[in-house]
Length: 354
Image (cartoon, rainbow, N blue to C red; front, side):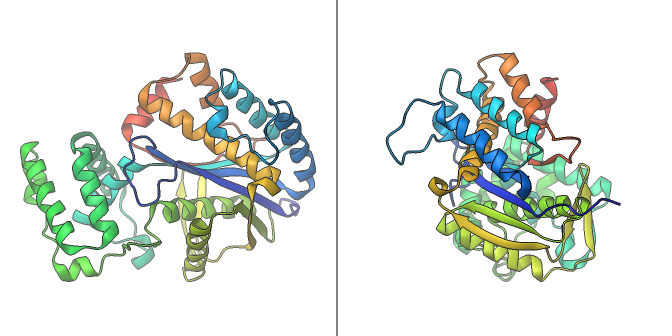
């Protein structure tokens, strides 16, 4: 049995957040992540980051070195990889959830028009053939449907506007016909106004927004870590953002209403659907918390990696492989707290890096 682990604190930040613009081609990925750190090691981690930050050219007083600037520097990516590996060497655990927005819309389409019982509603699961068929359908839609249709659909769902949704539904029908997907069209149900009104979507900050969906997964991964570490409780600190703070509080409250016995095994993780052992959730300005700035560097680096992967825009194959190695790096055989909601296209590109 594991000995009790000192209180764990997760420092999180995000990259690629475009709000309700679900298909921003300049920001195709949304990443939420950072570092899970034993409180006994926080001082050492802060010292590592402060030294790393100090070595950059002097900035105006109060200014931050943002990851978006670092990854554009000639040796910025190397410096960010060095920082991350230094933290991992101290025992800090990197964590990230990566959500490909275009693929996420296609998953939503597949679930909307070809529904099945959900875990939260019935505690039933898709069988493996059903799950694979759902993923195949989402990847087919990802590869074939136009950006215009996907944007129209996402906007319709986001606005909860029946007329807009009906138009998107009709356009989906015609686009599938044009693609020759007659088999799909023959099974395409027409969503009635009553059914649409019962959709679990919202034009504001619901559990089904991209941000909340990803945060939901991140919480489950951190709960997984706390349990294998035998932590009684753990803390979470996020960059101070009013809108995201509301989403996070709604999502944590949502957890408290879920059955505690439901778990789901995926990618070596046990995702817990139930009340969390989260002790405290706090929001701090990045200027006041070095480890939030440190998390900004990590998630910015990961987000940039996936954008470069999608566009085949790496400076070198060596850089690409070093970034992939960092993506899956863990400290002292700790669990890999990574979760990717990405298309077959991205998965194939990842595998090709070796």
